Image (cartoon, rainbow over all chains, first blue to last red; front, side, top):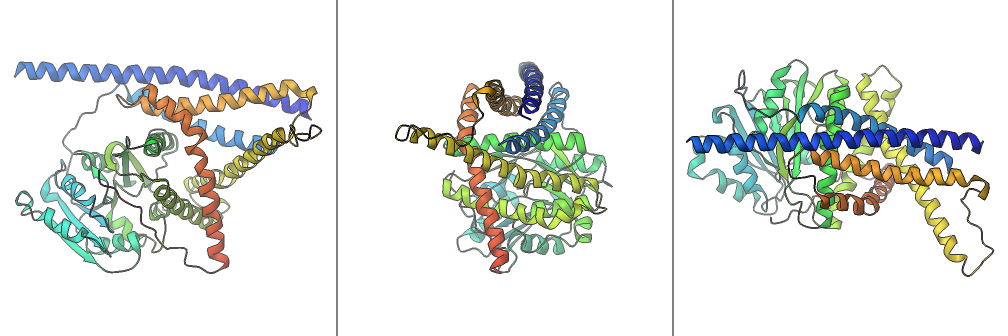
Length: 52
Length: 430
């Protein structure tokens, strides 16, 4: 019985590890997108202020 | 031991489904910028502020509401000083009496009645002139465009979006370690759980403040349940039962104060947990009848969180503490054996389970950081350390609160006590 539990645990652990890896990549992408957006808006606001 | 692990894995799997849904949403949304466009129309909104002994926090909230980016002639404001023993009523009158607010549709009511917040909301519902009711707690200062975003979302599909809710930020987040942990919890709940559930299942949860609801609809379902400890959870289930939706306006923000002391925090959370237990228990029957599938899913989710997951964590902690205690006793009684352990033949299983445990902590940290990444300036190294420290401290409070709340619910039934007594959350000067 414990042998089966070992293989189930192994499968679940590998699944969680893959999900953790994918989520980490996604997190970095979200962070970069938000940063990029912020800089674009900042630049636009500064340009508008200078234009005035 | 194995059964507690399986229960934890099931709960983690459910949480990961929601996390993945939220991540998918934020991957798309993070590429866009928010543009505030004029609305197709501006329905009249009755804003209700129930306040019980809130003189410390009410002034900035009322001023923030009166400065909302929404046509002033389309806002009716009802301020309720509900059974107050302090100067809440006087402060309200002082604020609305200022010259810049002359001519606004504002009523200040010094209420002496029963029913707590639900009682106030039902009274306000009866006198409201607005097409929508909008509720702000006394400590929840809306951001300038909060109402705009709520109404915008409602008008997307007025037939189905009978209620729309936004998010609430912690305005005293930096006060101490407790408020920093509460802030993280709220950010994760709103940016991951709420977003994930809405994106995947179109399930929403009314948060108690910073939300709007169609006046006609709330009257048709009989208003708020008197005596409900968590009137927001209760009405959320009623809305889902009717087949309508509680939509999420993720850009609508309000800033509210959170408890700054452990005592105030435990009292507030016990009330919430008790109220949620009452709602889940009363809705449990819907798991087996012809109810709307969203009600079944929410009931199942709540039941898993408050019963199955809690029990698994308690048993897991019991195993851990017992083994640690026995390891200590080994110094005095060398022949003592650890009661919960796998034999040496199963060393690989032990290693896998240890790695599994570390992975769960990692997934928790990733979830927190995804939530923080969605807003500029929040994803910092400090937040990672707070999350790690909170995992072993703040998060464990949930077990104590849940056990306390469930015991209270059971004792209320057995001893026929009034389980609806509302204990006020302490406010602080900020």
